[in-house]
Length: 133
Image (cartoon, rainbow, N blue to C red; front, top):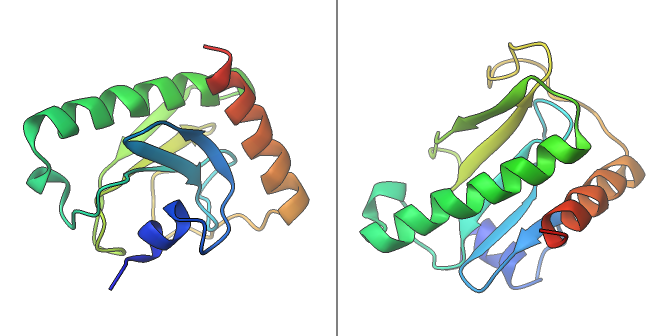
C-alpha cells in the first residue's frame, strides 16, 4: 500500500509543491513548525532514509540543499534547520525548517495554523525561487 507521501507525489492527495525533479519531490508540511517548513522526499518509496542506496542518499541531500536555498530567498530566517525524524510516515524524508527564533525544531511545540491561501502563496514563491536557479 502506498504511503501518504507516495499518494502526494502521484497527485492523489493535494500538496503545496515547492520543488520537483525526476527523483525527488518537496512540499510544505501541512502542520508546520515555522513558515516554509518543507518536506523533501524521494519519489522511490523507501521506509528508512539509510536504506536508500548511496547515490540516492547523496542526491537527496543535494536536492534538499537547493530547496533550502530557495526557502531562504523567500522566508527571512537565520538559517534552515535539517531534521531526519522519520517515525511519523514510513517513507524516507527530510524536514527543512526555517529557523526564525531558533527554537523551531521542537516537534512538541504548537504547530502554526496557516490559511490555505498563505500556504499556497509561500509554496508558489519557493517554487519560483527554486525554478529560477
